[in-house]
Length: 400
Image (cartoon, rainbow, N blue to C red; front, side, top):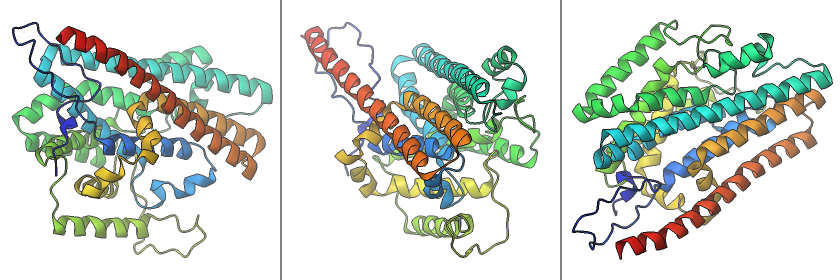
């Protein structure tokens, strides 16, 4: 199989070209993105929108109903994978200063999106409360109880993270830590994985190991960063393994069999049998695995899924289908699509709380939200293509 060159650098990167006597040399061809990453991330973002609306019928058929893990694990693991592709390559090509500046700008941009989402959510919910007299059962209710301005200030300080707006702060923290992950991986990937796994074990053994969250009953981040960092680091390590395997993880029959058997067990044990109106097929009487700390059953579930996803050549071909182009675009513009999904899910929660989750309303909310996200992805993708088209003639003139 041909090497997937995107693993050297992302399409968005533009390497600085020093003025040398080699200016006449042909410029390397633009690398091809790994469509698997963008399609899977786009799928996760659409799923997060559906799952973020309580009493939403389509949420009965999203990933968390068929095992132990859900879209959040996909999102965080791919964050580590993409960070290694983008910023790991930048460290090698442009040096530490350029890479650190790029990471800092990305963290700032994510924070500004988080701040905008928080402000918009507080204002919308406050207006809804004033108009209906209803009290929210979700999201920013703890922040509004503190008062609009104090709640906003604590939210902006990432000291009070409301439900449904708590994954971007985790992303900011993990991305800010990526330079340390990268330096460690350069010295030895297994050592970094061992250290990261030890921290994950400590967070699972002692649930007090967390960052404070004034908006939570247990006074901690729902996505405990001491636990979720392990998925991020695993994602970064997987990017190196995929690059070493010419775009695929090494296929091993025994590993595929183990992964398949575990996913079968996860389906039987974690399936939403009662919600589906089916007989309970769970083989063991055990509690659902802890999501806040990425319990071991959840961790094994996402690792099994990712092994099969990244080791099967057919997945590469499937994710390049034209019919998946809009989902691919969602993954390539993940921050904007996530923000649109958050706002659409907020409107959905408000409508369900105000008018009840009737079937016509559910159809309207889900159709409208998904159309908004896919339509925005189409617009952003078209704009990006026009921008790239304008840059190509300019780059040709410079080389000439």
